Image (tube, rainbow, N blue to C red; front, top):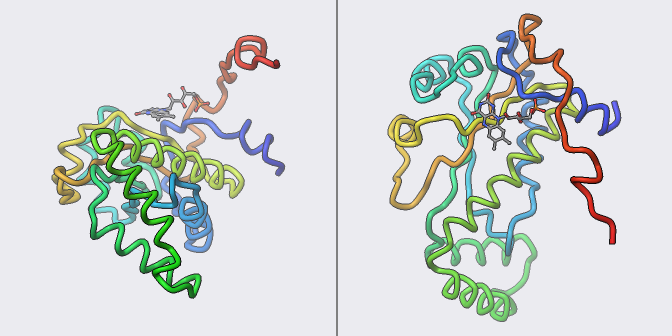
Length: 207
Ligand SMILES: Cc1cc2nc3c(=O)[nH]c(=O)nc-3n(C[C@H](O)[C@H](O)[C@H](O)COP(=O)(O)O)c2cc1C
């Protein structure tokens, strides 16, 4: 399947068939989230992958329309950072130094520019971090579509309920968006609806 076929086949599933995604395919999809680009490479997010049936059941009341949660194979909750702390930056630079086998000092100019960026945008860090999370969401959806795995991105949930269940410290993190994954149910009539998209002349401007 080429990528346009995969993206045309993709739709936001309302009801899955409860089939479980094989582990290897799930790992590939998660890897695409891991490989996402992020501003300054800081990856100001993490992903909670809900696979236990008991945890899915627990999360159902957090969603306004939970039919996806009760039938999906996995649910990914993308958690964005509200702040980028000194500690986090130190860890990031230690990691670069290890992976690229570079002495920490050679990274000083990059570290200084990041420090300046974080200071300058201090009040807006969360807004910035959330944007990065949506790039991860898009990559996960795209990879899933290529793997023939269906998805539904979902923002329709009570954030405070999810955060309580997942024991997220809301002073430093936020449950931004979720992605249900699995295989479409034959009963889900949404799969037969035509895609509604703006015509090219309203969407693209060539200059
Ligand atoms: C960030 C985001 C949040 C969404 N939240 C929900 C949601 O909470 N529940 C839902 O059923 N669909 C949700 N959707 C799916 C959209 O309604 C859907 O993508 C749009 O109507 C286009 O339809 P399609 O994805 O089937 O092509 C969301 C989509 C995005 C990108």
